[in-house]
Length: 142
Image (cartoon, rainbow, N blue to C red; front, top):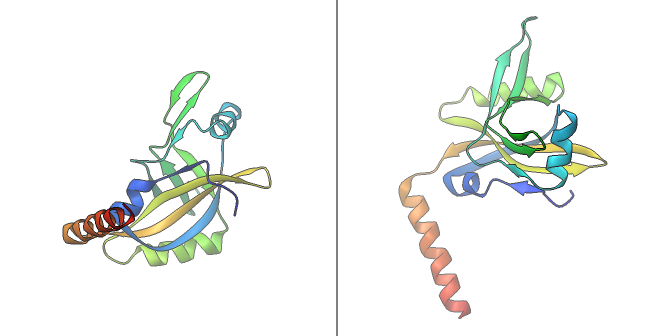
């Protein structure tokens, strides 16, 4: 995999990532330029399945911020994945307490890719434990 342009660090802290997938993005011209220059923010966004007019499930990236020439752009963007991948993902999503989150955005062979993860929310004690562990490691390095 190539170097990520942007990653959702908050998702890794707040959620336990169970599984991840790589999907394509349906973008407009100025959005590609904004992603290449790193003007993208994944935090606070999520991935949501919707039914299209033909009754097929589609995945949409909602709440992602891109700063284009025209200003801040927060429109929903369609994610490109094979039908079997979407069906498998929706089957896993049916389990209680799971959500889909964008994890990283990067380019692969000239195409914009979004790594999405199936995640479950962490408890507050888990977060505190992780913070303590990180502080101890920092102290030991000093």
